[in-house]
Length: 484
Image (cartoon, rainbow, N blue to C red; front, side, top):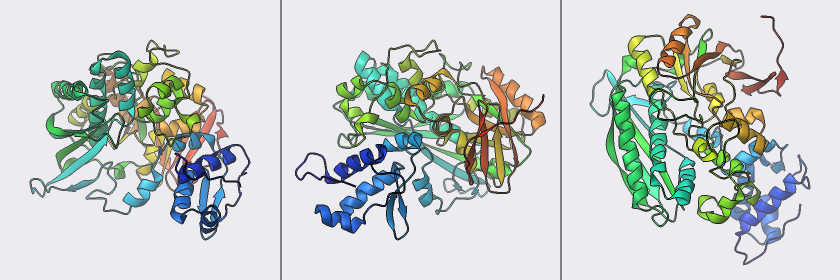
């Protein structure tokens, strides 16, 4: 291993270590299994603080390139290039390091629920409980920023306002929230790049979308919000929301009711629902960091350096072939329209299911962070089998083609065609499908649940292969042909 640290360089010492070791590992100069010198030895040799070296190696560990061994330092790990590209941009599809912390905290009244549920601290009613949830549009707002800079049309942020709201609303659906919801928005912006018309468009978009939802019977209201000018924290803007609701304890849905013997009905993320104004690509609000950099060309890095982290390897910044106005292959949408498709809410469908068919829903899973593997976090001893998925939408096909991302990883990052799962008895699946179609949303039985003797696991079928995820993942295997 060779390191050359240049004192006085504009690039911090820790970043010099990261970039040089990243290259050496990627090029094979440091093969899998190679043991690195100790932190103390590296720090002493190069005249650096131990914390500087530790910071660099932890970043490489996050990228999936190094692994810390108990009492024996770091070793180079066998590379899964798809994981490396995603994590190297500072994003984690499953947030493993976050769950190591939060999983130790109090899980609330219903530990197996999709969201944390507490006692009713707001009204003091012992028969009720409170749900508060925070989420946002993620880096999708950066794509809107690019479109705004190119066209000068601030209305592109209407969809970003919807994204932030839906990422909260549809999570709340999964615990059975069916009453009034109060939502507040937080906008952190760089005022030099995002003037008042951007904030006005976000507020207008929020109010319009909330009014649309109320017209569909979803009782959701604005609780105001906050706009902070934080140019030191972001070059563009970040749009987040917080939602709160009071729910009767008897109405709570928990994933504890997800058991073997259920059908999994997927609600499509593509097409055009009856309450949508245009075709939806299905992108939602997950995986946009990957989608943006893999699809969009280096021209955007040159023109808008405020839209990416300078610590990210230059080879991973805007490394695609497209501009926003280019057509999306296999679709009537442009690349920009597809990436900016507002995140679809399933609230009207779920509201109707809860009202018209009480007890039908045994579980709901919003395939957001973790995408098709999100289900692994819910239920106990469940083998999730997804063997009849929707056809892969054009946008995800193009992302995979231009990036070379392994299909197995694609299913962990993107919803790949459906973003809400309804768990029900097999005989009631038809009811769910018909009700969804009433709202113009395609639905199908995409799989089932069986018992598992080795923790929760998922078997997902893809073009003749079966990808395994969970407590005991294995390499992809070929699916056996069965008679029909």
